[in-house]
Length: 231
Image (cartoon, rainbow, N blue to C red; front, side):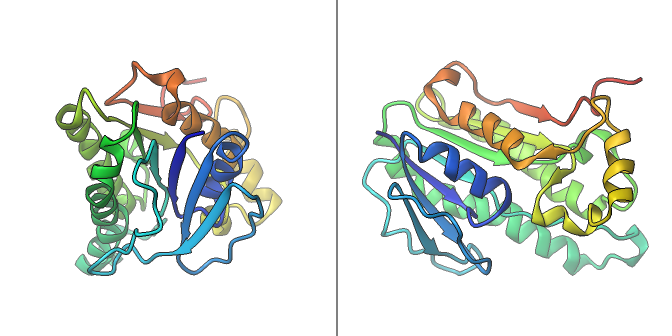
């Protein structure tokens, strides 16, 4: 049985990933504000604010087989209405938070046999969408961090990233809160549907597991084909 840390596992992709991994492994999940609904004997939940100056990860075991960093934000505004602090807040949560957690976990990851880190980007980094400058800027940094860490931590620790399109999660709730919005967004994708948290969690579980032992430094696009297929 392996040990996995899922940062931000109370809802959405983090919750789906915790549920999937707990079938065979021990999951240590963290949450910030949202209540945790997962009830499973192999899942433990702990409060964590990744923006705190010091991170208390004393609840983790000495050996950590994988880490997924799931916190995110979707701050969609016209560029002219965004302030520098808006970019900075996104960067703190999505980039600096990931950096702090990874640095704190490195000794425990190095104690495992085939450790893996999974980060999350967005299809907007590759595609370029209106009003996505803040999220694309911070997630673009995540993609760069993924490749840099994959090089620096090889051959011991694998580092990969998933770049979803819009997914049916609480984070995207305001964008998918009517049948009309869901249908309009679905039609933008070659597969004509919205992704689910389980779709993304399945890819994350693969990247955390031994099945992907020869995969590192990759940005995996789980996006209904929107980034690469034109129809």
